[in-house]
Structure formats: structure tokens, C-alpha cells
Length: 471
Image (cartoon, rainbow, N blue to C red):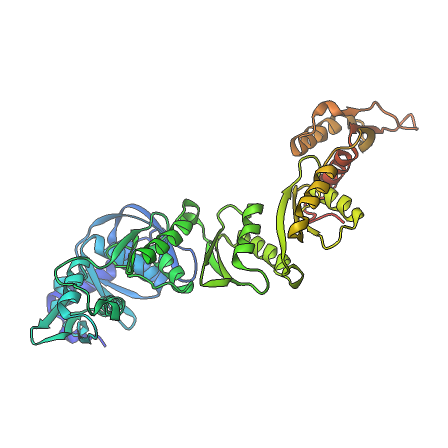
């Protein structure tokens, strides 16, 4: 517990004044994006306003012991504590936490007046010496004090706040390994590799590394956009490749960005990745896999895109597709996926499975599974069937209103935009009503039966746009 009786009179006055000031300021635009993360965008903001907003979001009493200063802040989707530490570090301040209070100020003041919150911890080393850890602490600029002894190079004593001691503990766990026992690690050479992130917070990337089973790095309060990673060149390259997949502009502003692990039952990761790649699933969705995990992949991206990818995986990760066959995606040229599937099924080809995803009335991606040595024959059938038939004239729409011609003109224009079928294929009739006092205008088209069916399907969607799939 923080004992306020130990504060000097001048410091008590500062605390009281600051508390009153904080309660009077208007909350700055700190936006909670999820339960644990926030986004901040401010220019020339009073740091007291910023801390007041943090206090409201974190349900903490923030006591500010510093001078008034203005800061610029731009942070997206980071943990609240990380954001607070980053902002304070940018102005040379630190903080200590005691129950429901957070005390903010310069390190000298906090160390002098709140020394009871500083801890001294000893760390015992197994494989490396204390001077190696000391040099790494200095290189990373972790703000702690340390003591080493010449006659005990397997121990180091660290003084600092609890969050800083945690970083030192992470550093020791990362470097104190058997492979470093016999290595020449003297001097001040940095043993960690900095990997910058441009769009996502490094803690987010670090969490992904943890979830996919890769050794995590260290993220320092002084720069939440750098991961300090440890490992050989192959490990570092692997970490860089993973981060590259998710460190994209779309994820900097996305509130729905997530990473989902998918366990496969029948197909291998390579086979599933091939299917997803051929279908170009969801912009922003990346697939991550590792050689040592042939039955598990990770999907990174927006929630809706991940949901689509999961649907595809569920459709193909089935027992029937585990034989020595091949799966490929065929993009139709002249007809829709639904029409081509209908034509192929008439042939009743043995051991051939044909499928598609949502909206096959309009899409052109057909997914085919067949024995490896039968693929050439299947493609031959597909090429012969993916053709347009002879054009016919068919009514596709009508209007019973006096201004029916104008109404049908507007619908014609929309159909051309949706389908790409030229407007010259369409004709709007005069009034053909049987009753002289009524109106009946007809829109008809001269096109192939495939395009006629396509137009009629679109008309159903135009009249009922919330329809999700046609029967």
C-alpha cells in the first residue's frame, strides 16, 4: 500500500492540485477499440487531459506530479498500459501503480518519494554470465539499476519498478540457454535482432508468435513498434516473414483484425493453402503454416474474411477427399459456376466431385476434385462445356405503370452495370396491355440461355436485395 504520510508537504500540495485540475479538464479522444486495447489520435494535447482520459478508461485515479506540457499522440489498437507507458516515455516520465492509483512523474521524483515501490530482485543464471545480461540491459536501455560481482558471475541484482523487472526476467529467459553456454558472448554485442512493425503494435505481433509456437521477443515501453527477437538466422527470417504477413495498412485501422488457428483433419496444410490461394479468398486474409505442423494453419485478417476461409476449409477437409487425388479451381469463361456444375453433373463422371461457394448464380469459381490421372480428361470436358449456346429472345421484366418505359430504362441500365451484357441486347416494347385503359410494358433480351438465366437471377436480387442465395 502507498503510505501518503511519507510524502513531503510540497508534494502533497502538488498531488491535491493536480487531482483537482484533472477532474476539471475535458476528456480527450481516447477510443476504446476492444476490451483491452485503445486508439488515440491527438495533436497539441495537454498531458493532463490525456491522463484524465486514461483514468476514466482504466477506472484508476491518476495522480500527476509533473509540469504542464503538450504532446502529439497517434496510436492504433494497443493495450492501454502499453499506450500509457509509450506516452510517458516520450516525455521522459514514468509511473508506479498502487492499488487503484497510478502516480505519474519523472523517475527521480518517483524514486525519491516513492522508493517503497522500487524492488530489488536477484536473478540466478545457468548458462551465461552476469556481464552478458548487464550489457544487453544497457544496449536495450531498460531503465533499471543492476549490480554484478566478480566472484559470482552467475548472479545479477536488479532494482526497478515491477514492469521493468518483468522485462529483465523476459530477457534472461530468452538468452540464458544451453547454446549460449560455450559461445563467446563477451563485449557489448547486441544478441537480439530488432524487427520493426509499421502498422500494428509489436505486442500484437508478439502475441501471434506465441500462439503459433514461435519463441516470442521483447517489446519495450520506449518503442511499442519494435520486437527484439532472439534466434539464429533461420528463426529471425521466420519471425520476419510472419510479421510481414500481418503488418499491413488494413490491420492498422481494423477493429476486427484477429488470428485464428484451424486444425485440419484430412487434408494437409499445403493442400488447403493451395485451395485458398486459387480462390483468392478475402483481401487481407493471410495463411500461415509451418513445416512441423502439417495439420494446422493460422488465418490472419478480418473476422468476416476468416469466416469465409473457414467455410471453404470445412467444405474440403473431408474424408472423401483424402485419396490420391487432386483439387483445383477452374474459373469459367463464358458461363457461371452453377451452370457449369449442372452441365458436368449430367455426364456423371466417376470419382469426380464438383462444388462452389456462395452466389454460384453469379460467381465463376468452380472447385473440382478428381483422381490425379483423370484431371486432363476432366479439364477437357470442362473446356467443351464452358461455352455459350445460341441466342434467343426472351421477356425478362415488365412494368404495369403509365411511366413503365422510363422505369424499365432505369432497370435496364442497372442490369447492364451488374452483368456487363451490352445495352444493345435489350429492347423495351410499347404498351402491349390487352386493356386499352391499362399499361403493360415488356423488357426483353436477345441473348444466350445462360445470360437470360443470369439476368432473371439478377432481377430477383434487384426486387429482393436482402435475399441470400437463390433457390
